[in-house]
Image (cartoon, rainbow, N blue to C red; front, side):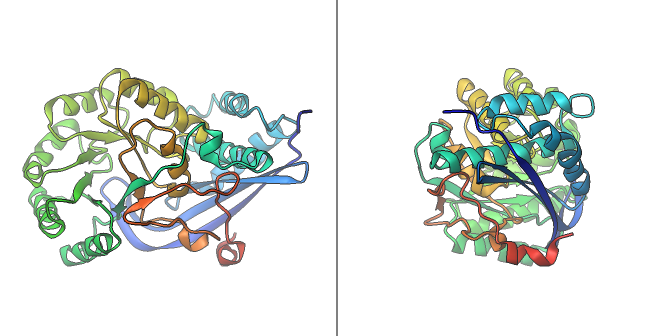
Length: 362
């Protein structure tokens, strides 16, 4: 077949309201920025997106409009891996992560969606995987919540059939963190997996000190204990703690995952197709996890992650996140018996409800 050349790259920006929430690393959060990218060729189109926690979205859109769109127009849409490397190289001097990875991700996701539409196949099939039911866990951005509100949130997760729940830690008083975790464990019972997430808020020594009183609550994993630049610190925590160390949402390229896996600094590899730099980048992270025999999970990007985790050898959980885009999708992701499956429609299966999004477009 003759090559199909990219004809148009169009973006849109939305600021979506959130219930006020927060965590120890990022502070207060009351909105989510959504940047969509639509790539068109031969009458077909694919849509991708990036998100932020309320800051930096206009810069992500500007990178796409000013730097990536001119680069992609006229390129063969089918050469996705080549285009990822081309975008990475074009933004190398100001990138190697950060906003550049978010911009590359939005375009990369659009390319995969376009490829799926043109091939008439769902994303998981394009990735060489088969559909499977992935266990999902309920996840809130809940550090500011008073304990009664936190417990009500957990009750809602349990009512939805989730086999696992995650709560934020990192309050100024470590005893309060430990109490909150004990109360969640008491409510959830022994059969529910309980994860905690510090959102990079501690040093390695602080993480060791703070997590010890919580170990009796039988934690399934300890997520983002310290800053992602401190690979050695994570390796120390992985070696000294019985609680598995989970990390990945703040890693912005496959090269960062390589260091973590090589230095035995991670026990559960988490992917996020937006923060990691796209579907192409997250698939490389999953391949590293598979080669090392590590289990995998996800951060946000629920709909995309359902496809990607099907391509992993040992996917243990998909995160159903507080920021879920369900209200803005034509087909929200379904949770059945605490599990999710990837969509069967061509491409990513994500069709944004433009009418629902319209009030928030800027």
